[in-house]
Length: 245
Image (cartoon, rainbow, N blue to C red):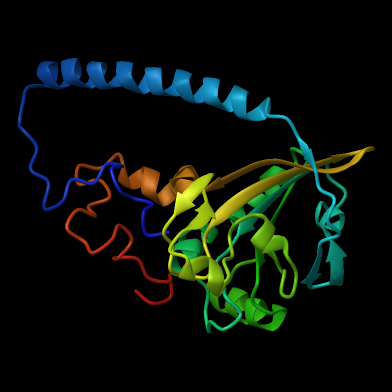
């Protein structure tokens, strides 16, 4: 997820704003407010288009290992009609989960209970075995449900896991195009719905499409120095697991 922060409010260095009168500040603030309102209207328009996307039936019999044993994709809905899956980068050979995915996941526990009131279940899915997920979840103090797709095609089919052959070719299918990617895992978020006809895939987003789910980044966007990532080797180079600062 190294590309998350690029071009999104980073200013670099120590902020030193131009000192003006309150009247001058108010004029400048109203100009930015007009841009913010335009962005809000555009976001609302995109949201309507996203919700209107057609659905694709999920035919594969995916299964996952979770706290209650083996579960199907439909069982992950937990009786609700909508499901959000965060594709958390955690290769089976790794000792801990991805730092960037952990950054996103630090925001989830507070949201899960509210999502449930709107007929939405949210879970994280990773390829690492369940015992590794349990240990890392306990270390991070998270409470959201996290299941393992180890040994299944789920991650591959939703373009967040890549084989050695994929990477050896120098490009992989990611974010609806060809990309160069050297990790066996990539981040993403997928949405599913179910009704009397079955389970359907309705939406997936990847790369910087995940930015809007990182509340901490958007709080940084309103301070003078912004995300302050210019000059770093990559945009999230400053980031650590929350117990490692």
